[in-house]
Image (tube, rainbow, N blue to C red):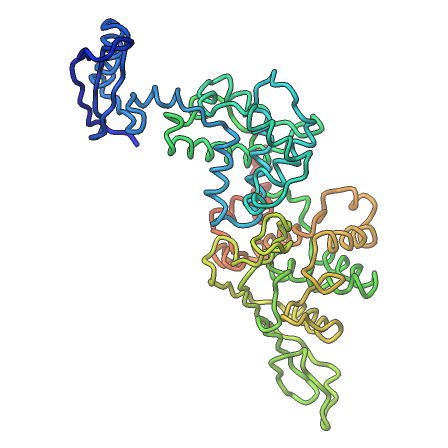
Length: 478
């Protein structure tokens, strides 16, 4: 803690001491300090430094009694120790995927900020594993660490540079440059660099908060992270015919693949995020239909049974509704509080218990009703499950999606970015709605976006008006 309440007394001599008889006393924030010197000249020099710092308006540290700038220099808190304190501060309120992201960013930084000539450095892979699995994971700090990883962390404790070393522009630039390189030596993706830079900046801000640094050194370096593309590449956007062919291809791959046909349908027809679709519950769905033969309306198409008066063989699905209440992103067992691979959370960018209602077209109502009749739902009501009944894994649906692309698309389309990832179905949904004339505010609400983000991300995918503009330009060229 720093204070501007400083009292400085004159130098006195103690007759009862022979080795260091000259005494200088001062107080900071009511806390008294004392130093003894061999000669009056040394005591006067020390007193002059404190008087000058006080006259310059510099705060003093109440723990050491020295000017704040000098106290920071004297502080030998290492970057490794500070990183652990930072992670421990962030951990309780951070989502599991955020925890993993923080550790992924701080691990290479901790490996960079070490004394270059410190003997006994472990292999980079061992050091990286030790940090990732144990050193930067508060959940495992109480566990017994394997010998190789324990030795690596012991070496790092002694080799880690003090935080104050980052006050050097050359050092902070070295760290920033290291964020741009992958393990294989190739350039890292722009989004990865920006994410890791943001973590570094935040960790350094925490060092300023702890008074280990006077200011964030990143602000003093003219270093710019690579630009991240904001707008969606319109080449990834599929049209309704292509999506229908892809869903048919998934269904044709067999019973196991057919279990995720509805999952992909949710991404396209409802514009859901994969983590939202993975957590979709039976009770959160309205799947209405109508029988043209008998004229009856049904609230739940999946529960319709033949009756004595009508077999209900030609039921027509109608517009339904989904109430999205949560997500189940996969973060890994190391990062969740309960040790499960998936963490059930609220909707992205929303309060924990806030929901989002999304109308769904008859096509999706029919797909989901068929899914319930054919595959049922999990005991907890989840539509989509893994092969053994657990949460749906990305590796499972990614595999089926790749096979469906090869079957439904041409060779040139397979090689192109067209719906290369299941997430691109959500982009296709947003593009379809915007080009159909749905107001941006409504599209943003259904997607769970802000309007500004929606228009920025999908600016390249909005058609309309090109022919009119081209005619005007063509007329001017004649």
